[in-house]
Structures are given as C-alpha cells and as structure tokens.
Length: 467
Image (cartoon, rainbow, N blue to C red):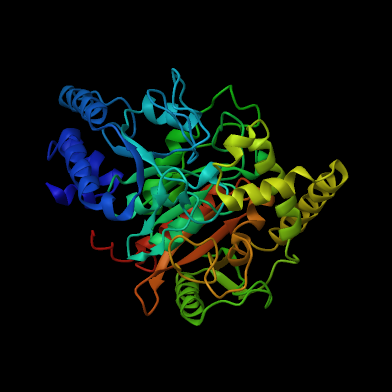
C-alpha cells in the first residue's frame, strides 16, 4: 500500500473513517518509505518503528469502535529533534547533549498531537541547536534535497521538510527562528507556516527568545490548518502563549481572496537580487492571485535590512545555548556555531537593548504597513537550493546564512505569521517558494490565502521521485 504515503493527513483520516484502510496500513507504508529513502536523504536522526506500530494498532482499534481520539488519530507524524518528546532523547543535532536520562516530558505541541492520537514515527534532523539555514551537523551529517541529492534541504527544519516531501509522513513539527520552517519548505517544495509568536505554545523556552516559533510542515495549507487546530491548544508551561482562537483554522480556510488588499514586494524595493527563475514563478503566481479577485499592487514595506539587529539577538542566543559547555565540549561544536557564539558572548547589554529597540521600530512600521494591506507577498527566498553541506552558496561571497534569507528573518523579529507555498520549479527542477505574510494574529487569513492558491492549482508541484 505504498500509495498511502502520497495521501494528506485529511485524506488518511477520511479513509480511516470510511474503513478503506487503517492506521496500521498507513504507518507500515510510511516506515517502508523511510527505509527506502532515508539512507540517501538523511531526514531522520532516530526512528521507533515498534512504538509507532503499537500506537497505530491502538488507533486502529479506536477507529474500529468508531471512537477516534482526536483530529489526527492514526496519522503518521515526525518531530524535529529540537522539541522534547517523551520516551527518547532530544539531542538537538549536537554531540554535546547527553542521551542518558529519563526523557519523560513532551513539548506542548508534541503533547497536543499525542492527545489527538498521532502516530510518532521518528525524530528529524537539525543543524546543531537549529542555528543555521541549512541542515548538517556534527552529530547526524548532511541532510539532502529530495529533488536533487547534491543540493541542500535547507534548514534548520530540513529533515522535516525532506520527510514530508518524500511521503515519510504527511505532518511534521518544525521550529522557525529566522526562517527555519519556511526555508526548507521552500527548497523541498512543501507548505510551511511560521505562526504568530505565542500562537503555538513552546516549552522549554528557546534560548533564542521570542524569535523562535513552532509551526506545521505539511503537503498543503489544509493539512497545516488541521495541524494548527491541534497544536495551538493551551499549555500552562508557556506564559507567553496567546488566548484561544475563535472558531478554528480549518473553518477559516473558506472565503477565498476576493477583495483582499495584497502588497507584492518582488525584491524589497530593489534591496534583494532575486534569481530570474524565482522572480518569474512568483510573479506568475501573484498574477493568479489577482485573477482570483485580490486587489494586488506592488508596494514595499518601509524597512531597511534589520540583519544587524537580528545577528545581535541570534548570536547572543547561541552564546546562551552553549554557555555552560566545557572546553572539551566546545571543541565538538560545529565550527560556524562556535564562531557566532564567540561573537554573541561579547555583546553588551546596551548593544542588545539597541537591537530590541530596532526590532520594536520594525514591528511598528510593519503594523502601519498592514493598516493599508491585508497581506504582503514576496519570494520566500531569492534562490533555489544550492550545494549540500555549505552554509552559503559557493562563490557567493556571503559569510552567514542570513545573507541569502533576506525575506524570512525580518518576520521573526516582528513575530508575524508567514507561510511559504510552492509555485513552480526552476530549469533544474528545483522548487520555488512564494511567501505570504500577515499582520500579527492574522494566521487564519494567511492560511486562507494559501489554501485558495492550492485550490486554484497555483500552488503545489509534483512530488519528488524517491531516491
């Protein structure tokens, strides 16, 4: 039943309800797919087939009784190895984390999925402590792009993106501190959402502070809405969590985009050099958005590049993550991470607070921008996937991953919801992503616009052929 690996979570639940197949069938198909593809792609750092099948058997029995436990009962799910999941270690891509211990606690989003009957098939790869926009680490090596194994999957949720693209489970949990859901989702041709900060509870709190979000990585926007209806459940461990959403995210998918005011910024006012194939695919999709009834005009946010403020906050967070490591442990770190930790440890309180002020000013400017526009649309990235194992494209002259992600990290600073949808491929067959950004708390609107693009056939590309 390998065709089950091509179904969305919604389709799987529908099939369980009708009795066409069972969670055991779906889980076995996903485990077979992982066995086939993971040696080449390296999307998973750990699998637990025995536990997954036991969870699937329990789910199948609930469905036979007509008593499903929740919205994703029996759906195979993977979890980025940054988020706690009871029953095994969360190693965070690092050789400095000890695997010993009880590991008895779930992160809030994992706990909500467990309460809704999800089947956990494994933990997905991440760069060390999720520090960069590609996925390779001293612990688990290089994760590769499903469309071209010589290219990067992106990061830091690269394992999750590759898994979903290849049919190794339709749902995955990722984290996004500067684009880490959207970057790999764009490179791997899937859907990814960074919700408004606080919409999905997070525990333990990230050392990267309020830059770090938890979000769904899925085949389409409808599955992301389903997942959001699960993972946004309240959790007292996160004191920054937002209140409950009126209605539900799946209900909010209806309504289309007719009448919405959409700003299209193809290059942030000429600040970003976007590759022609990316620019053409994104513009064509935006024209389709206008054809669906949205009022689209080219307009750029009033924002200078906030990279220095982002670096101050991000590098300081990296230093905080590693501050208690011994010299011997520091020698085990990714050299790039070790470098930014050294920079971050030298940041003064006054410099840090100046970055906080710059962040607040950017947030105010974006708030003003969204008083005129419901949504902002940009390319997700100015390029398609480059060679695997490198932080920046060879020959680019760039120093850090932020040099090629100018459309993503600003919206971590402002805490706005932002999604990426696949809208085409370049001449090498590599996916191109379009980013949809909403005002803070407008997560449902972002999902609705993305879903409309999928329904119209504007979003979505053929899945990669398994390696």
